[in-house]
Image: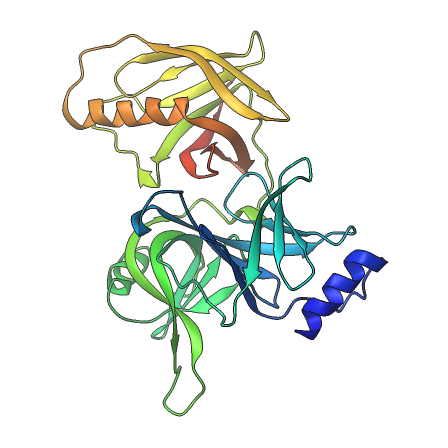
Amino acid sequence: MAGLVALLLFAACGTPPESTVPADATYADAHMVLTLFADQTFRLRQREPGSGSAQDHYDLGRWSREPDGTLQLRGGREAALRFRPEAGGALRELDAQGRAIRELQRQAELDRLSGPLRLRGMYSYMADAASFDECLSGRRWPVLIEDAHLDLERAYLAQGEGGRWVLATLQGRFVMREPEPGLPPREMLWVQAFDRFWPREACAAAAAATAPLLDTRWRLVAIDGQPVTVAEGQREPHLQLSGDGNRVSGFGGCSPLYGRFEQGSDGFLFKGLTYRRMACTGAAEAQEARFIDALNATASRRIVSETLQLHDAQGRVRLRFEALYLR
């Protein structure tokens, strides 16, 4: 509580001491639960109004204290979330113009928001011990050697010697377990479903943008977190963006794509996307439809190293591409 009181005081009186941080605490209203940890990481669960728990959206990442006393949270969304500490221990969410959106009340008990969450991070396994460095928060967790971890372990060892760090995507929960009998419980990662490894990629925090948006052929590698499949002899789905008239061209997997794009301080979107429907059936046709639906839902974009991510209006990563430079 002392940390939170100090935070409220510096918001009113000026720049706080550098050591002042909120203690571990959970804040909530009817649709959002936010937990701030003292190591400057956070977890968040948000529920769409009128929906059940099946529509819960989880996020995690890092928070920082701004000079004006507000807290800024950066996670899987393109735009950061901002909160202002209020008298009585509440947090007020602010929009981009600084206007109040909602008020979260501090809860009596800490909610660690264990998940399930879709996670992306660097994984390593050696001598019956596994670790996972989650990309958005920068935190490392030991991984439980049980359940779906077996699938992850097999795929990892099939690539060669243990001990390397490889980017992985998976679904998991955070659980409190004793690392060894008699030792205090600590938080560990329980893998519920393994997605895949991304051997040529790294976490965003460790890799700045190196590929330009324009005049790069962007090869589609994932739709809504699911890897893209291409039948033998088929062309790969891709996009190419040109600064000449903000034109878009590409290939959906069955048909050529054409249109325009717009970008500015308020986001990134595609306009007037059309495609020549070619003969295509089965999985390829369904995959192309998902690709086009996600393109039409695009609201922002981000380039990390050689990877282009397209996000929807809720900040979810809908499409991921790899750069193939044009000669």
